[in-house]
Image 1 (tube, protein in one colour):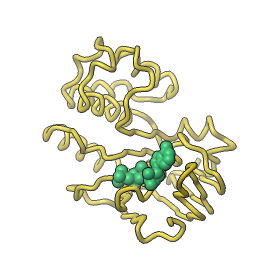
Image 2 (cartoon, rainbow, N blue to C red):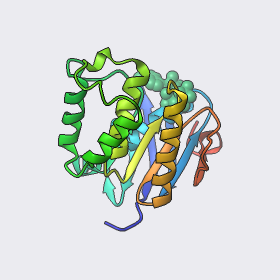
Image 3 (tube, protein in one colour):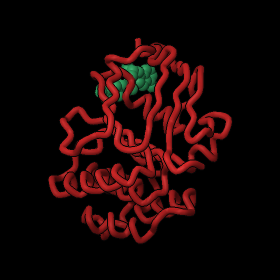
Image 4 (cartoon, rainbow, N blue to C red):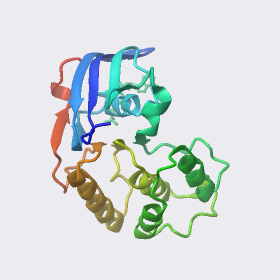
Length: 212
Ligand SMILES: Nc1ncnc2c1ncn2[C@@H]1O[C@H](COP(=O)(O)OP(=O)(O)OP(=O)(O)O)[C@@H](O)[C@H]1O
């Protein structure tokens, strides 16, 4: 594995039953913070899910450090993490169990860092609560605290600032800026709000060939 992570999207096609979202998209994403932009319905969330291995391409390839998201699915997923705002899939778990389940998939996760992020987000005391009992903002913080503690080479964060309180926005901005500066991961972030931190690159789907 090289020092600098990179993602190559080659001739990507993706279709829902009623909508073609990508028709031959080609991209290269490098280390640092990529701000993924585009108007509503353009395909930002779909692209993040494809990049995170949560959806499979209908055509073409996505490669992270040379690993194919489809052919090398497990190894690819160990190096990537999609952080969306959706309701938890395993909704009978407590917050602590939810974290442990994910940590089991990422043996190199930094547990000390996770503890620091939970503290910084003021959710260190929610571990015993059912994950469905968390507020929207608390669940988002739980996902983000985990995401920031993982050794992911590719971190995908969908509208991370929506629903966060002001203090948490500051914590997240500092962490993302630190991680982007370190250059050891590709961070792809969507936000309809202007960013208060400087992205390394902006990727505008409205101006991208292959996005009908
Ligand atoms: N499960 C689905 N079935 C059918 N169409 C879908 C599905 N999910 C998304 N779409 C469609 O795919 C397109 C891209 O959706 P996506 O959520 O990726 O857009 P987005 O750029 O993230 O939008 P927004 O800025 O509003 O969050 C939209 O036209 C949407 O209606």
